[in-house]
Length: 337
Image 1: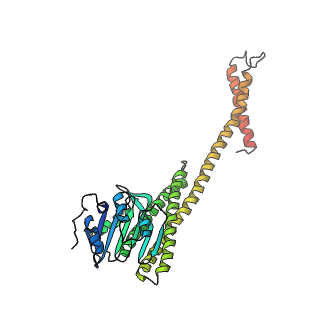
Image 2: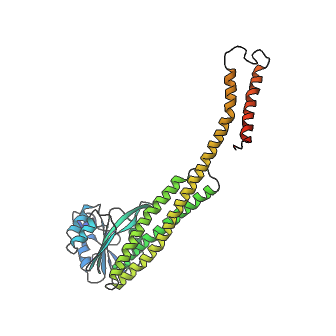
Image 3: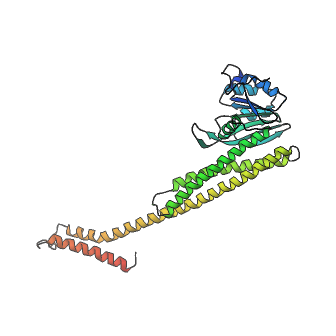
């Protein structure tokens, strides 16, 4: 009989097992039971069902537990605790080891920063590890606590990657809505520079597209290798690859939209700048002759016009105004504007 507890793990002790985030044991029907950290070895040895052990790499006790776990191969231990960040899935006999992406979970919301979920999976065991809390893992855990069943480890991994794909889809929808708002502002003649906002959308779309493309290509390769050896796992990976392909196409279209919108905004800002420079040029051309007139009347020389004339200042002002009007008429005559 496994040592179970109602909703939390045992208090921290000096043993490596005490650093484990949580342990679940799943029966053959997929129902799950939360297991005390101290009973993890007993749960892993249980002949019925399978066990999920989740680790935090920020805790040195978890690293010590992985290093001392003789059930894992050397490569599996390296994948779980190593510094490598590249996405991968390797088939090592009865083991499947890999690194897949997931969105980091902040306190109150999902972050747009993509983290890494490392895992080692067999027919009866799934050991996962992360450096920071991950959204899909926490969401799947809540589903387990709510009664969702996972009869096999691959079904759990399928749910985690599927949740990541769903969250990326929701992110793509938010990015699309932001692009819609920017397009509306640009089309309605907004004079604000929207390029920083579009740039952020484009950068996020590029990052997500890169991870989705790598994950999709990786699943396609693994699915082809496992099609004859493990048909259920290959079928689950094929379904995930198809879903990722659909979402990746949507994210790719967002990137294309953002790139075209940046060009549109840049053209709009260039047009506004040219219009302002043109207005400034016309004003300069119209004010230059009056400046010349006022400079002429500012010379302290003899025989200056209107010097002894009543209202001479107003006559000089009229001459300057006339010079400006003549300049404006000449520019219009030459069709300068």
